[in-house]
Length: 236
Image 1 (cartoon, rainbow, N blue to C red):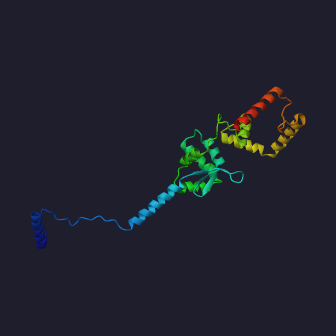
Image 2: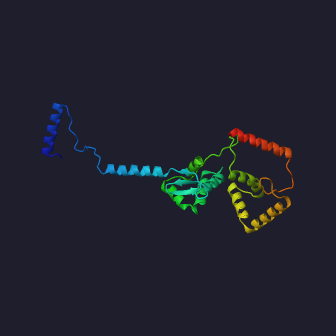
């Protein structure tokens, strides 16, 4: 029940409203205001988001030789490019769940700090793999006039034999191959075979050990030498 005071106040307000045309502000109206503490909080949040964004950027760093090999970097952590290349090959055609499992299992043992950096940056494993795949340098293919590198030519020469001898995914085949060739038994057997080749067939003009007694066609050899010489002059 309203008191006499409230009745008189309400009557006064109604009279003022009729004369001025203005309505009385509700006593429950709240004027919005922004506490000063919110601004520093927003600044900290923005800085944190920017830091995470920067950390989530993976970069590729080409190597400069045996002492410094090519690597992918995230924050202060890195993983060799060769390791990622094997993961990319093995993940080909797999589901996203399987790809994520591969990334974790292959890096967890020796590169756990790289995984921690991805987790800290809230970077999905599959997304990280795609980033690294996109950053991987593309080798020059045929038609460029550039000669293949020593590693590429050696791999090409060995891969056919690997495919005939081993089964599984590319990564599994390479692992099986490396396990065999690094064994003492293989080294001894290979040395004996090479020694036998050198004894029977000797070495060619280029210094490589010959593996058969077949002699090259003199005319073909001369034609090849002429073609190489002409190619060398054309480049100059």
